[in-house]
Length: 396
Image (cartoon, rainbow, N blue to C red; front, side):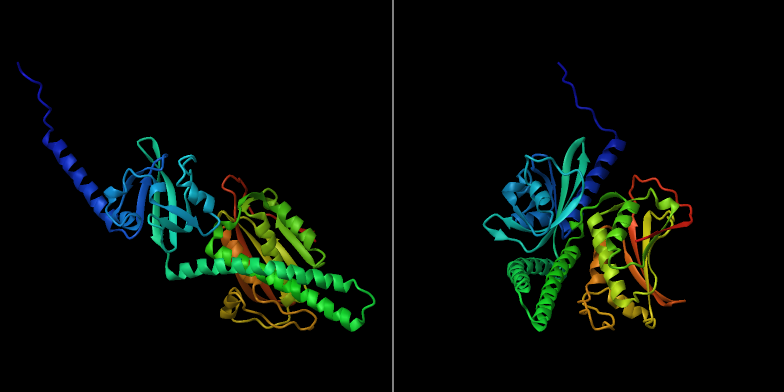
């Protein structure tokens, strides 16, 4: 009785199998040589693949000790930014796998009670054999990035600790101001004290926001927003601060939709307006102009103001965008000079929604014109014309 024999692969098939094995082996060697820890996990949060760096980080051993174990058995995640829920959800089999890529700065709590240095945890979905998986990478943050995280935590703690005593002092100053009769001298001192309290509170808020944006730009909640109604609303609310403020736009902007955080746009424009009013001349033009769309995928705003000051060097303008860099002192002496955070906060907000901010100066008929240009990404679904159009004017 004869038995069925196994098919003998052809020489061509044998070569292909050999080449495939060599390629996979070289790929594994490359992954094991990488400094980043890499894991592939399934919907049950079971590890299907791991490289040597992940094994050394999680178990101090080899990849075979990590494969087929669940993430919850290997680590806990202590997130240090606004992505805590998403990061912790990576370990929870009761939640769906993430559908989009993400990242979080975090500590890893490892078996034995050990805690890792600050890590950058990244994840992105992958499709393998029609089954959902997630690729996770973990790497140590550089000393500079760790310092930013520590700075964020310090500023958050400082603001929290100072919020209550500042509120108590501010409330007592308001109650004292309502007492009567008060001499003019005491009344003026109380007014100055209340103004300084407001200034301190705004300074702390700006410092906290600036730090959060530097460490985690994704803290902004960006969504598709019609641009023109937002600008008209802001100009209407800002009219009390500057009666000379004008909004200019072309016909193609009427239906423009941008992908931004609307609150962040309002705050950035507030800071730019404060800066323009502090360093510009109140009796000279102040314009917010929406430039025609140019097909770049961005919409550009320009806030221009004028002053009698001389044009400064480009390196000085660049320095204005750094925190605590101040321009000229107040000429009338009635307002307290700001801390030099306005342009920095506005720039970080702009970067947070994926745009940019630039400042330039040039001579004009009314003196020196300072132009702050910010860009806003257009919605991917928006369909707008890029043809130039005549400008319209909307006085605030």
